[in-house]
Structures are given as C-alpha cells and as structure tokens.
Amino acid sequence: MTLPMYTIKKVLNNSVVICQHDTDPEVILLGKGIGFGKKPGDLVDPASVPEKVYQLTDKEEQSQYQELVKHVDEDFIAFMQEIVGFIETSTGKKVDEHIHIGLTDHLFFTMKRIEQGMEVTNPFLLETESLYPNEFALAERIVDMFHERLNVLLPDAETGFIALHIHSATTFKNVLEVNRHNQIIGQIVQTIESRLNVKMDRTSLDYKRLLRHLRYAVERVATGEMVEAPQKIEKVLRDEYPLCYSTAWELMGIMERELKRPVPRGEATYLTMHLQRLTSR
Image: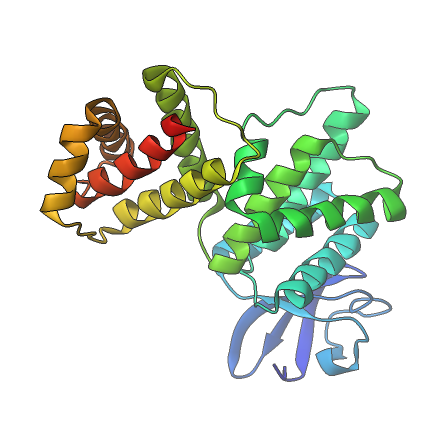
C-alpha cells in the first residue's frame, strides 16, 4: 500500500512517530528508523524507510500503543515490528493492527517473568498445536528468532501463546475469543475422557480430526451457523452407540452453556461418529 507524506506531530522513539496528513486523521507510523533524527513539523515519506511501515489508525489502539511504548525498550519495539513483518510475509496475509500491541505486550512481560524466575505454563499447548499447525510452526520459528537475536530462550508454553496471537491477527478475531474457544475445547476433551473412560493419544490422527471438528463446531455455534445431518443416520447412531450419543449431547450442552447460543441438533450426529471412532480404537 502506498502511503502519503505525513507531517510529524511527535516522535515517540526512533521507530514510532505520531503523524498528521491533510486528508487523513492522526495516525501512528511504525517502522525501524522512521523517527531517527526527526522532530515535530518534519515530513516523513514512508516509502523512503527501508523497513516495512505500519499504520495504527484506530484511536483506541493508538492510545494503548502510546502507553505501551512508555514501558517497553525501544530496540524491542523495533524487533517486534520485524516479527510482525515476518508473520505477514510468511502467511501472505495482512494482519490486524492490534497484534502490534497484543503480541508486543505479551512477549515483553513474558521476558520479565522469565528474568524473575517465574514459570510460564500452557495447559492447552498440545491442543493448540493440533488446532493451528501452520501458526504453531510459525511460532516455533519466532521462538528461534528470540534465541538467536535476543539470546532469550522462551519456554515451550510460549509457542502456543504466540500461535494464538498469529491466528487471531490473521483471521481478525479477538485473541481473547480465540483463547476462550480453546478453553471450551479443552473442557470438552476432558469430558470425553471422563465419560467414555478413555485416554486419548494426543498425537493420533483421530484425535487431531476430533479437535478440528470441535474447533469448527465451536466457531459455527458462536456465529450462529446451522449444520444439518440426516435424521436416519442420527437414529442408527443413537441405537447402536448410546453412550457416545448421550456424550455428544452432553458436549453440545457445554458449548451451549459456555457460548450462550443454541447448538444445532445435527452436531449430535457428527460428534457421535467421532466419539465412536475414538472408542473403537
């Protein structure tokens, strides 16, 4: 995207400036070196900056980012802009501008916790890897970049958290919503293991298929999308696999309660089929 010339109103640091343009509202421009040697009133041409330049246009996002810049090291701000560029290049997708705030804030304070010897845990790490394999692989590369560039060894738990931020930013979904959906799926998995008296192999293909179905089922319920299934198939499954069928309805109850939305009856058929496949193994 071609950006116009902007007049600098305030330089927050060498990589962050607040600007104004005649036809545009006030924006924050992010780019390595974009504010170097600049002062209020100077013009800045984003095209002349060798690194990619990002705009923060949302007023609330601008306010949050200005507050964040006060507490975060300038070099880390520049490094995170590089990380965001790496995510866009690797995925081929434009990202939600909130990632500049959410991921920067998360990783900066994660490093602080590591420095203080605090443990970082992630109970949904395996589920996140199965649900978002592409984002997870990209997150692993970002963890390597932290080690190579900053000599910071992020714990395995962080790979999952970074993957969620990537998924949130590339799908323009709120990261809190994405995390909440993960928690619901985790609750469902625990219920399955308890009701069917099974311990699922987190590395198995059947488990990954189940997680993918649960992910899309939760998203469908959250958006109100309907799903249909032949009633004859439902009757056969109910008669042949009563425990799996009743468990499927219990899982639907969890989704309905947590998402506060009705779950289409057709979900019972597909859930029962997944559960039957798991128990038959």
